[in-house]
Length: 139
Image (cartoon, rainbow, N blue to C red):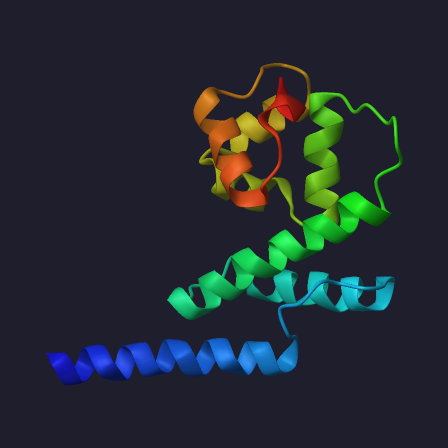
């Protein structure tokens, strides 16, 4: 059993290091790096992955969000909750179905975007945890 655990941990570390070599986890400096990072996120989203890929993906999303906040969000722009969700979906190249898997309900995404309902507290918590955004965006 201990040998399998070591092999699994080594595999996670190898996967993580391969991703680091491909795109190091460091502050994103320009739109070219941003585009490459978003491409990698899109590639990794929705796939089964081990702890190494999950850790890498979570950190890369934080770096992309930071770059976007600092460079692509005009000051003073106030988005409706639906516009905020659409912006997150567009930025991360996510469909309604993919967003539904993140919050746990595709129909809730559709109804929210259509103005037919609000997001529940658990939906908002899932969005905050996944995209590291302020919950007030959706209220």
